[in-house]
Length: 125
Image (cartoon, rainbow, N blue to C red; front, side):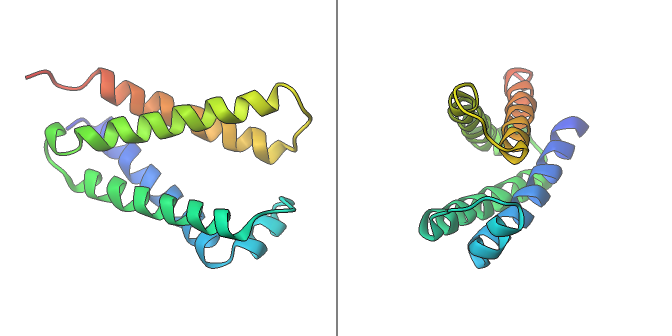
């Protein structure tokens, strides 16, 4: 597997682990600290759990040796990030949101591009 793919898996695992843990364990404090209020604690915890699951998958992918071991995860990560970015962009274009939302959009867009690159340059068998 390429060094680029390994690096993306590791970075994604760390980012998802940190953000996911905060959103699952202390959603109110986490979102209030960045000025994101009001919030739904149930949905925030669920999103935190999803990020932790993605972190685990990315960590396992980082440890994998062959692309075929991570193929499905690469597609899931690319689609999750792309659809999330598209969903946020729809709101960003019609209303005034704080810079944090633009930052989340940027992270999702870059993640989608990185995983898309891994997906479309995968080894063909």
